[in-house]
Image 1 (cartoon, rainbow, N blue to C red):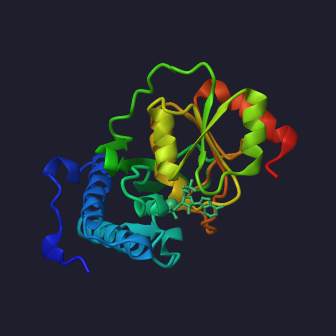
Image 2 (tube, rainbow, N blue to C red):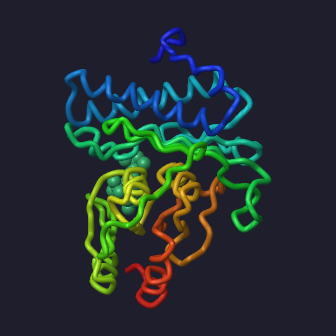
Length: 270
Ligand SMILES: Nc1ncnc2c1ncn2[C@@H]1O[C@H](COP(=O)(O)O)[C@@H](OP(=O)(O)O)[C@H]1O
Ligand SMILES: [Mg+2]
């Protein structure tokens, strides 16, 4: 257990700003995960210790600083109170748990997103994401909606598609062939989205399974940076739905969305 007196304290200017708080929370959990990685654990023990430590820290900090808000975390039961709440933090305390347990890999992340009732244009249900942050602690980087990243000019003429390292959807290989694209396998949905923000990749395409916590914060950060985000059928990404499954998405430079969605419309994702 994280004892309350071991909790880091957010600076005053962070407390009043959801964007800043999301970034500070993700970075704080990332620092905790870097400490856990130094404890000499391996394999399943290291994965479990990381998941638990980051989850407990985020839940304790949210209880301390946003006591009226609901929380949906990968590492806790979904009590559905969130469906009546006006504000819901959607967190994945450790995304890319597998890669976290394989030092010195750096492709793992902390995701913190805020969903707010009444936000959005009505296409994404009763509310939408209003703040978010993705920390990539092993790089010492945190990307937030508060200070949206400026996506640099594209350095690769040939599109680079970030794809799951352990569960790449089969259709993405055919998509890459059609677009004359290169596949870039890596762990963590957050790291793949951040790789598009950083011009390490130009698109992230996934299907076959994922949950709201895997992509909420990455999508908040990607939208703020001006990237295109949708389901693979072009439909909206809906958060804080009853069903936490959100199995597919496309995040890409805007100029690639048409070709990717057209491929999926023609060939499906089987
Ligand atoms: N087919 C699938 N079904 C369920 N979850 C999936 C999945 N493919 C990827 N994910 C989840 O999405 C996150 C990123 O996966 P990947 O690294 O393979 O791209 C991981 O989250 P966690 O590490 O939080 O479990 C992983 O569990
Ligand atoms: Mg995850």
